[in-house]
Image (tube, rainbow, N blue to C red; front, side):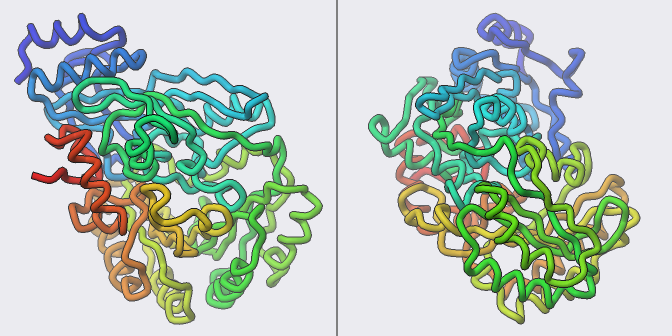
Length: 454
């Protein structure tokens, strides 16, 4: 229990708003994207800046409180919240400054992708950042950061130039290629294990304002043939094109096989490159067209609305073999009724610059696998949870033989130590040493945790 005196002390030390369970706004502030997560922090500190974050870390240490860190609140595992502890909420820290001459940007940790893109696209610039505009930049980048531009420009973490991070002892450090280099290596894929990043400096690239993007849909009956074609197509596609493909239920209840993509080079070149994907067979719908990059980043938002039940499984594939495709299609055919649920089995193609970074150059190790595979189950009514989770697990088990020994940490549910080890792959022991140096008591443990030695 936190005493009234301690609560008042916290409010005095923090410039931003501090909420207790009885305060107006608490119920809204405690909620995160995944409605399966229903936790109640003892305090929520809505930080106004880095100084507030420092004070929160010190306060939590002094009062022996567990700490969670909320950026965009989009983690499917619900790491942004906790029971009975202090939620350090960064969502009001939205400062951003673009330098169009140097093509860099300094962005605070409370920004979402949509807010970030709004500012950088004013100068015709962008960097790789996910695929949903409501995602927070912080958690996405710290976990690696797949996105529509990764073939041409690498992952989000590959475009980091520096970070400001509050470590467990309550000090603010800057980490870059020339300052606290070991910490800079670790935050590029090590998730939130080493501290609270309050701001990110990214490299930007000329993108848009218009790109060739969106998707094409084919009947689900053609799924096996299309996925085999997609495998061949992606084996030689140019860096400028990043694609995703899979079997899904559309918002109007139709079961289809689809491919979405973004070509970030000249539109005319993109039309030629994408033509085979758009003429594989007679499509149900071909929606590829020149579109604003900011609209592309919002394109999938309606498929993943906040406040629904979410249960995901994800891993990298060793290869998209014929046997894997057969199992993929068979699992999709058994998915629950499309009238009630949003389900999909999905592939993200990782190639180009993202795949040419060495596996130990950053903490994110999964550079050698061409596809990240995911099962997304999303539904509004919790009474259907048992059915949805059962299908997801059964599909996961059926596809396990084709998986690599690693996972994308940003898509992991709360799955415990073995999954965390797999997510950090060959870099795990180096990350343990880094954790032992910067967080020896495991103060930051509400995450896909790396445990310090001892």
